[in-house]
Image (tube, rainbow, N blue to C red; front, side):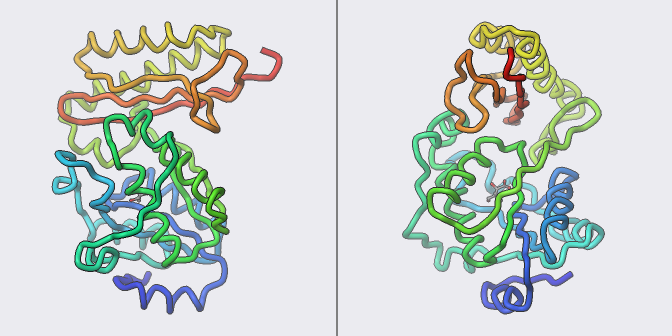
Length: 281
Ligand code: PAF
């Protein structure tokens, strides 16, 4: 596996390769990321994994400095998984002198759900992903469904800006307890890690109720919020949304996603579950 630090080297490598898949990450790789690498391998001749903790997608007071940086272990995992290139640009390589003057501005969805408490986050994501796309020029790029709103923003961006890149959504990897894998799980204490499974359990309960015909989305959302609050969580949102557009779910919608963000202790966790109803319901 090649370890590439500069845009020039990456571009030279790209010219010698046919169908390339990109897996953009911020490192601290876990089984969720590795499943993205496996999906990427199935769709291309060569796989590039980028590792870059992108300052401009973190808000003031968020965990940019604290974000786990584990490059050596990440490289070992990527070698074992058979990635071809790991692209690890220094901050100055992507943002020379700390400057980015042009940004990719997502539409109103960037201010909803996670965007309400993370202003500017999706603009930072869309901008760095565009830069990575322009550098790597991949044919396909893999993104996890765990970051459902991020995936929707990227899919919309690729479509609206006519980027010739196929976006492959990859299913969430979960611990045995149901907890969605995330680099931020490392912030949880042992006790919190056990309790954290309550989030996915509440989403499962809503999904089951909807699949059984309950369309009172507001009541389902409220009861999950109340349950989690009673168990010590600070809930940011739990909402049933239309899966493709992330607009508010209507009772006539069949493709739904239940999205959630909540804080346990000092750790903000996100999760979601899709519900696809048969069209006769
Ligand atoms: O999902 C992530 O790890 C990041 O948001 C991404 C897509 C690598 C952009 O920095």
